[in-house]
Length: 310
Image (cartoon, rainbow, N blue to C red):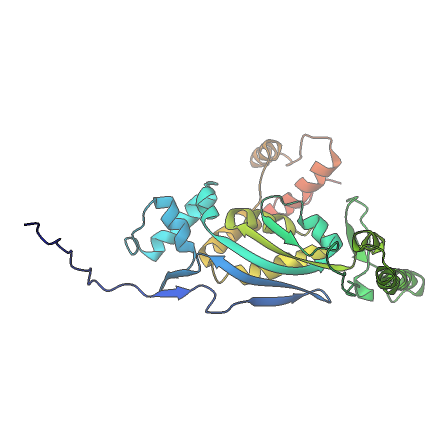
């Protein structure tokens, strides 16, 4: 006669409660620019053991262990700092964030150069582009940088009547191009396809997308787009992104600030200049490239080695 199958008693050990890294919110949103926003709508992992943060997923992947509570939180912090310090980046890919973003098209075209995320953008072929345009304030219109061909620097002094007129003319120009939207709408009503009608709209019109990225590549994005050399408008979105993820991965953000964002990277030539300084010589860069010389001048000041030679 066959024997009845045996059963294994259920594990009666108390389970660590799980908490939502987003505090139960379906969406956390911050306003950016005049009509834009950046919203965090999901994170992976979404649930973590009580008392931990999503940083624990990095630690778990690095140790190739599924056990919880085998290490102290202080040890987790040390491991995360070690991983970032030595560029062991794979464990940071275990965390993902998904954002909903509304931004001017010119910001989106800079953003999309980071080809390490999943993106789905609002379709101007399928839907009408909304009447929503980015307009900078009068005192934020920037002059072309004399040292950086792709950037702007100081603003126009509004106290000077001659120079104040230029920002006013720029905003008048934007109002003129924004006036194209009613004509765009009328042409679509007359039967012109949306995919063609949209090509006459300016780059300061807003678009939207969903953007999902793992933490490793998100930190690379932030390193480049929070940098003072990045365009002011995309820096505003990067700052909002950092504010939303920092409470979820605080140990990682702390280490990233220490080892990347607020650190100084040195080239071989710069190290040789520092060695010369320790021997009582001027810490000059043996290089004729003007941009490298300027970058070294900034690093010299940050390191307390004095300003670069004129």
